[in-house]
Length: 202
Image (cartoon, rainbow, N blue to C red; front, side, top):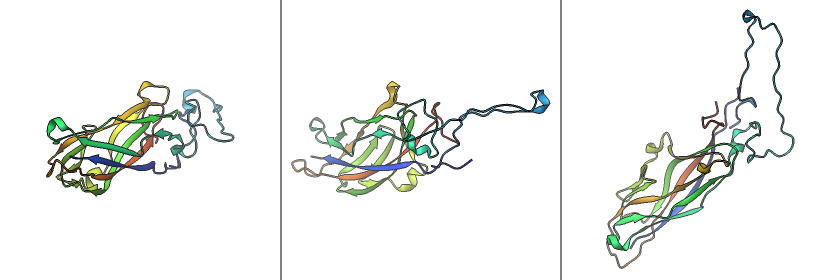
Protein backbone atom coordinates (compact mmCIF):
# COMPACT_ATOMS: atom_id res chain seq x y z
CA UNK A 1 0.00 0.00 0.00
CA UNK A 2 1.42 3.36 -0.93
CA UNK A 3 2.13 5.84 1.84
CA UNK A 4 0.10 9.02 2.11
CA UNK A 5 1.76 12.27 1.08
CA UNK A 6 2.28 14.87 3.78
CA UNK A 7 -0.94 16.69 4.53
CA UNK A 8 -1.34 20.21 3.25
CA UNK A 9 0.08 23.00 5.37
CA UNK A 10 -0.83 26.65 5.64
CA UNK A 11 -0.13 29.69 7.75
CA UNK A 12 -1.74 33.02 8.48
CA UNK A 13 -0.76 36.23 10.22
CA UNK A 14 -2.06 37.15 13.64
CA UNK A 15 -2.00 40.86 14.43
CA UNK A 16 -2.76 42.59 17.72
CA UNK A 17 -3.58 45.95 19.24
CA UNK A 18 -2.10 46.55 22.74
CA UNK A 19 -2.74 49.60 24.44
CA UNK A 20 -0.17 11.96 0.49
CA UNK A 21 -0.22 9.54 -2.28
CA UNK A 22 -2.93 7.86 -0.29
CA UNK A 23 -4.40 4.50 0.44
CA UNK A 24 -5.88 2.28 -2.23
CA UNK A 25 -9.39 3.08 -3.34
CA UNK A 26 -11.09 0.45 -1.19
CA UNK A 27 -12.07 1.26 2.39
CA UNK A 28 -12.86 -2.35 3.29
CA UNK A 29 -11.31 -5.75 2.65
CA UNK A 30 -12.74 -9.18 1.95
CA UNK A 31 -11.06 -12.44 2.88
CA UNK A 32 -11.25 -15.82 1.20
CA UNK A 33 -10.15 -18.94 3.03
CA UNK A 34 -10.42 -22.36 1.43
CA UNK A 35 -10.45 -24.01 4.86
CA UNK A 36 -13.83 -22.41 5.55
CA UNK A 37 -15.51 -24.10 2.62
CA UNK A 38 -15.78 -20.86 0.66
CA UNK A 39 -14.50 -22.42 -2.53
CA UNK A 40 -12.21 -20.50 -4.86
CA UNK A 41 -14.45 -17.70 -6.16
CA UNK A 42 -15.38 -14.26 -4.85
CA UNK A 43 -15.86 -10.73 -6.18
CA UNK A 44 -14.85 -7.18 -5.47
CA UNK A 45 -16.40 -3.80 -6.26
CA UNK A 46 -14.57 -1.55 -8.70
CA UNK A 47 -14.93 2.22 -8.23
CA UNK A 48 -13.79 4.77 -10.77
CA UNK A 49 -13.23 8.52 -11.03
CA UNK A 50 -13.57 9.97 -14.52
CA UNK A 51 -12.94 13.69 -14.69
CA UNK A 52 -12.43 16.09 -11.81
CA UNK A 53 -12.67 14.60 -8.31
CA UNK A 54 -15.49 16.18 -6.27
CA UNK A 55 -14.22 16.45 -2.70
CA UNK A 56 -17.55 17.83 -1.47
CA UNK A 57 -19.40 14.58 -2.24
CA UNK A 58 -19.40 12.21 0.76
CA UNK A 59 -20.19 9.23 -1.50
CA UNK A 60 -17.02 9.65 -3.59
CA UNK A 61 -14.36 6.91 -3.43
CA UNK A 62 -10.98 7.91 -2.05
CA UNK A 63 -8.69 9.48 -4.70
CA UNK A 64 -5.07 8.33 -5.17
CA UNK A 65 -3.89 11.43 -3.29
CA UNK A 66 -5.81 11.55 0.00
CA UNK A 67 -4.98 15.26 0.36
CA UNK A 68 -7.53 15.91 -2.40
CA UNK A 69 -10.16 15.60 0.34
CA UNK A 70 -8.95 18.86 1.90
CA UNK A 71 -11.39 21.72 1.24
CA UNK A 72 -11.38 24.19 4.14
CA UNK A 73 -12.03 27.93 4.29
CA UNK A 74 -10.19 29.83 7.03
CA UNK A 75 -9.11 33.43 7.67
CA UNK A 76 -5.83 34.66 6.21
CA UNK A 77 -5.47 37.14 9.09
CA UNK A 78 -6.67 37.01 12.68
CA UNK A 79 -6.67 39.43 15.59
CA UNK A 80 -6.15 39.62 19.33
CA UNK A 81 -6.38 42.71 21.53
CA UNK A 82 -6.24 43.94 25.12
CA UNK A 83 -9.33 45.13 26.98
CA UNK A 84 -9.85 48.60 28.43
CA UNK A 85 -11.66 47.26 31.53
CA UNK A 86 -8.59 45.18 32.46
CA UNK A 87 -6.30 48.21 32.15
CA UNK A 88 -5.06 46.56 28.95
CA UNK A 89 -3.71 43.50 30.75
CA UNK A 90 -6.23 40.91 29.56
CA UNK A 91 -5.95 39.59 26.00
CA UNK A 92 -9.04 38.48 24.09
CA UNK A 93 -9.95 37.95 20.44
CA UNK A 94 -12.88 37.46 18.09
CA UNK A 95 -13.77 33.90 17.14
CA UNK A 96 -12.26 33.18 13.73
CA UNK A 97 -14.26 30.64 11.74
CA UNK A 98 -12.99 27.55 9.94
CA UNK A 99 -15.44 25.85 7.57
CA UNK A 100 -15.02 22.36 6.12
CA UNK A 101 -16.52 21.93 2.64
CA UNK A 102 -15.16 18.41 2.27
CA UNK A 103 -17.01 15.12 2.22
CA UNK A 104 -14.53 13.82 4.81
CA UNK A 105 -13.51 15.08 8.27
CA UNK A 106 -10.35 17.21 8.42
CA UNK A 107 -8.02 17.50 11.39
CA UNK A 108 -6.44 20.94 11.92
CA UNK A 109 -3.08 21.05 13.70
CA UNK A 110 -0.61 23.76 14.70
CA UNK A 111 2.91 22.92 13.53
CA UNK A 112 4.92 25.96 14.66
CA UNK A 113 5.00 29.69 15.34
CA UNK A 114 7.33 32.04 13.47
CA UNK A 115 8.18 35.63 12.50
CA UNK A 116 7.15 37.21 15.78
CA UNK A 117 7.48 40.99 15.95
CA UNK A 118 6.99 43.46 18.84
CA UNK A 119 5.81 40.76 21.25
CA UNK A 120 7.73 42.07 24.29
CA UNK A 121 4.62 43.21 26.16
CA UNK A 122 2.77 39.92 25.66
CA UNK A 123 3.29 37.81 28.77
CA UNK A 124 1.23 34.82 27.73
CA UNK A 125 -0.89 33.97 24.70
CA UNK A 126 -2.67 30.69 24.07
CA UNK A 127 -4.82 29.26 21.30
CA UNK A 128 -8.35 28.06 22.08
CA UNK A 129 -7.30 27.67 25.74
CA UNK A 130 -5.41 24.56 24.65
CA UNK A 131 -1.72 25.46 24.48
CA UNK A 132 0.52 28.56 24.50
CA UNK A 133 2.14 30.12 21.45
CA UNK A 134 3.81 33.10 23.18
CA UNK A 135 5.45 33.01 26.63
CA UNK A 136 7.22 36.05 28.12
CA UNK A 137 7.29 37.82 24.77
CA UNK A 138 8.90 34.89 22.93
CA UNK A 139 7.42 32.35 20.57
CA UNK A 140 7.10 28.79 21.81
CA UNK A 141 9.99 26.78 20.27
CA UNK A 142 9.42 24.36 17.39
CA UNK A 143 10.24 21.42 19.67
CA UNK A 144 6.95 22.02 21.51
CA UNK A 145 5.08 21.31 18.27
CA UNK A 146 6.78 18.00 17.55
CA UNK A 147 4.43 16.27 17.11
CA UNK A 148 2.01 19.00 15.97
CA UNK A 149 -0.74 20.02 18.39
CA UNK A 150 -4.37 19.44 17.46
CA UNK A 151 -6.52 22.53 17.23
CA UNK A 152 -9.76 20.72 16.39
CA UNK A 153 -11.34 18.23 13.98
CA UNK A 154 -13.84 19.52 11.44
CA UNK A 155 -16.45 16.89 10.63
CA UNK A 156 -17.58 16.43 7.03
CA UNK A 157 -19.64 19.20 5.49
CA UNK A 158 -22.99 17.48 6.23
CA UNK A 159 -22.48 17.72 10.02
CA UNK A 160 -22.99 20.69 12.35
CA UNK A 161 -19.40 20.34 13.61
CA UNK A 162 -18.04 21.06 10.13
CA UNK A 163 -17.58 24.62 11.45
CA UNK A 164 -15.23 25.48 14.33
CA UNK A 165 -13.45 28.58 15.60
CA UNK A 166 -9.97 29.73 16.53
CA UNK A 167 -9.50 32.33 19.27
CA UNK A 168 -6.80 33.72 21.54
CA UNK A 169 -6.63 34.44 25.27
CA UNK A 170 -3.81 35.63 27.48
CA UNK A 171 -2.33 38.56 29.35
CA UNK A 172 0.02 41.45 28.73
CA UNK A 173 2.00 44.08 30.62
CA UNK A 174 1.78 47.34 28.64
CA UNK A 175 4.68 49.70 29.29
CA UNK A 176 2.86 52.82 28.08
CA UNK A 177 -0.90 52.30 27.86
CA UNK A 178 -1.49 55.55 26.00
CA UNK A 179 0.51 54.24 23.03
CA UNK A 180 -0.61 51.37 20.82
CA UNK A 181 1.65 48.51 19.82
CA UNK A 182 1.00 46.16 16.93
CA UNK A 183 2.66 42.79 17.55
CA UNK A 184 2.23 40.02 15.03
CA UNK A 185 3.36 36.49 14.26
CA UNK A 186 2.72 33.62 11.86
CA UNK A 187 0.77 30.58 13.04
CA UNK A 188 1.51 27.56 10.84
CA UNK A 189 -1.21 24.97 10.30
CA UNK A 190 -1.45 21.46 8.91
CA UNK A 191 -4.65 19.98 7.48
CA UNK A 192 -5.03 16.20 7.63
CA UNK A 193 -7.98 14.46 5.92
CA UNK A 194 -9.55 11.62 7.91
CA UNK A 195 -11.67 8.66 6.87
CA UNK A 196 -15.46 8.57 7.22
CA UNK A 197 -15.18 7.50 10.86
CA UNK A 198 -12.77 10.30 11.74
CA UNK A 199 -9.68 8.08 11.84
CA UNK A 200 -6.36 8.62 10.04
CA UNK A 201 -5.99 6.99 6.64
CA UNK A 202 -3.59 4.06 6.88
